[in-house]
Length: 162
Image 1 (spheres, rainbow, N blue to C red):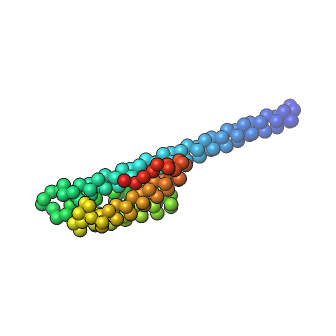
Image 2: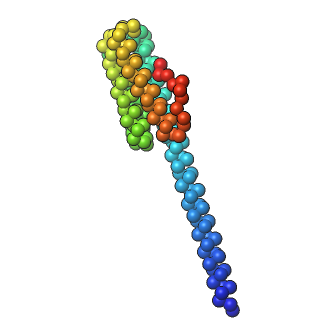
Image 3: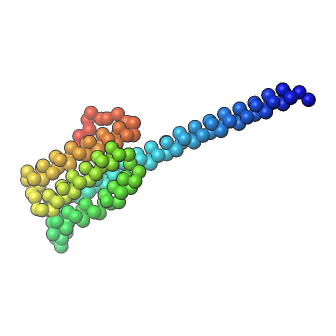
């Protein structure tokens, strides 16, 4: 028996199996990255949706569209809380990247400040409410930019907040 033939066959098998394993490992890594990106994309969308729904509910309270059984402050707090903003924010903190989490915290806190202005009884056309809306809109735009950057999407020049 020719040892060279046997050794060549064995070496060929090792190279073949090794390259298959490396290719499978690379494919698995890409799939994991794709799944993580899809997860973050959905999570970021959920957070933006929760913020938007809470904002719309706060506008309704500002215009007096809430239960007469509640004070305006309690109505504003209920409007903020009913859209799971806290829960989705916690999920984002667990899975989001640092720039997005930082921008999300800022947006969350500015929306809470908007809630407090609404709850204090500020009129819909008051400077206090306009300032709160403007401050929230600015950080919301920054949040969208951070999310798009992290997801590898180009920024939208037309991105306006409100």
